[in-house]
Image (cartoon, rainbow, N blue to C red; front, top):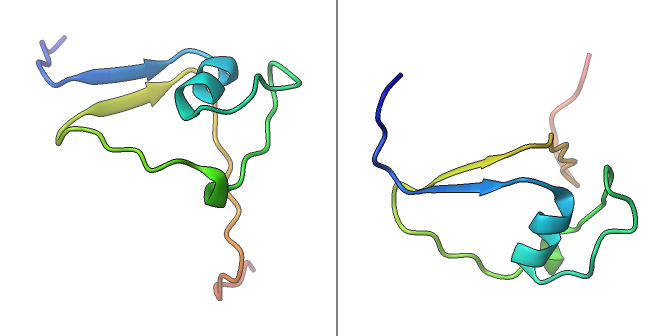
Amino acid sequence: MKNNSRPHLHIDSLAELHTQLGFAKPKHPLFTVLQFKDFPAIELEDGVKVSADFYQITFKKGCCNKMI
């Protein structure tokens, strides 16, 4: 296993994500819906690795690509 000296931000739960972003606690521990327009500006140092213990599904509004 490599010894990676890059800074690392790990988010363990949706509740922690909400806290980091300044949102109220999620109503459900396994599911949340957020809108990008409500996100605060986030500045991370160059090279910071971000990981999380959950999946993210993103929908783009007005995207011109088509699914077949």
